[in-house]
Every structure is written in C-alpha cells, then in structure tokens.
Length: 274
Image (cartoon, rainbow, N blue to C red; front, side, top):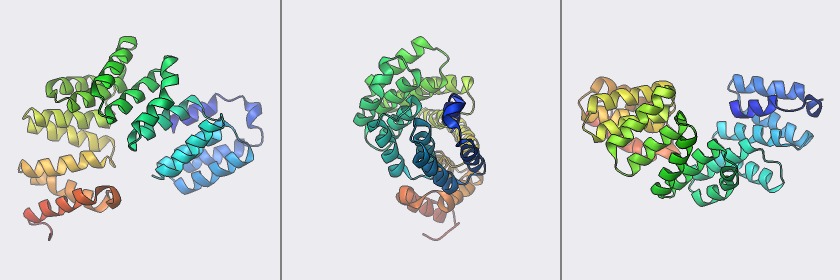
C-alpha cells in the first residue's frame, strides 16, 4: 500500500479535485484493515474518474483481501487501456510470477527493466526463479547489486535463488546480508532458516523461523516450517503452538495437505486426534 500512497502524493492536486474526500476515506479504510470498504471505495474512484491511481488502489485492495484473480483482471485491464502506472506494472509482474505465470510476468516487466528500474529487475529475477530459470535470476540479481550493493530485496531474492540451486552456505550468507540491511524482511528470515536447517544448524534455523513469523504473523510457510521442524527436533514448546495456529488460521484452500500433516504431527505429540 505504501507504493500506492506514494503514487497518490505525487499527483497534481488539480487532478484530484472532488475526489480527495473519497481518497482520504479509502486511506482510513486501509488503516482500519477494512478491506471490503477499501474495495468499494476504490471501485467508486475508478468509476468516477478513470486514471492510474484508481486502478492501483483497487488492485491493492483486492490483493489485501486475497482476491488475487480479480486483482489480476484489474491490473491487466489497466495495462491494456494505458492506465497502468509503473508501480502497478511492477505489482502485476510480481503477482503473475507468484500465480504460476512467470513468462507473462517477464513480458510485463521487461520494458521497465530496460529503463533501469531496480524494483522491476528484482521482480523479473523472481519471475525467472519461479519459472525454474535460476541462472537467469542469479544474473539479474547480480546486475541489481552491481548498481546498488545495499539493495536488501535483491539480497533476499539471492538467498532464495541460492536455496533453489542447493547452495546452502551461499543462501545463508545472502539472507544474512539482506537482514543486516533490513531486519523486517520476513522472507529473508525464512530463507535463512531453511539454509541453516540444510546445513544441520537446527537451533539457528528455528530461531530464524521465529523471527520470520514475528515480523509477518500470517507468513504461513514460515509458521509451518517452524512447527514441523521444531517437532522433529523435540522442541514441543515451539512445535505445539505453531502447529495449532497453523491449523486454526492458515487458509485451508492453500494448505489443506500441509494441515493434514500438521494434524498427524500433533497427534503424534498427543495433542489432537488424526
């Protein structure tokens, strides 16, 4: 949402005459976590005055509500009609990469990359990685880091790519570098946990996953990693609360199989029936 808010602040106030009250209501809805109200207000904004800002805000509201397919439709329509800002195109590429359409993501992001957009380069690296093109992803991230050695997002993604290449020590080191630059990167903490675990460093792995969940409580993959690996390590104190919350709160449509395994683990710990 901060990207969209920055886009709003960049607009000429004359273009927002008559809409400022609605936009402020929208910001208030976001701050209260009222996703449905934010979606309704964003749709009104788009209907009242088609412009990139409205489509950006609507897409973000839909993503916040986990209505990803609707958000993709909004972003693709904005792109087709020339109403897509750079921030929306970056998000479109990222969302396509994350929903199994990495080649479409490349098509969206490449023009931004050609203009030297570092955020788009990071998103393109993720798209390559999701498509299994780890070497292309690695090359793109090295290009980003050559331009900005302190780019925490690039280092976070480098950790992910190194994991997918099976380079555990390099993944650990890249993830640590990302966290040193931006401690709030939950995915870097998760990658660090995986790298530590693969290196046989179970205690540091569990600590890293705890950090990931502390920074992003609905990071379900990190919570599942914490719960199941803590159980394997005999850390019942960590495993039971993590697995219970994973069962109670993680979306069943995405994690049904893992939740079945979580129930089995809890049963083995004497906590629930299979």
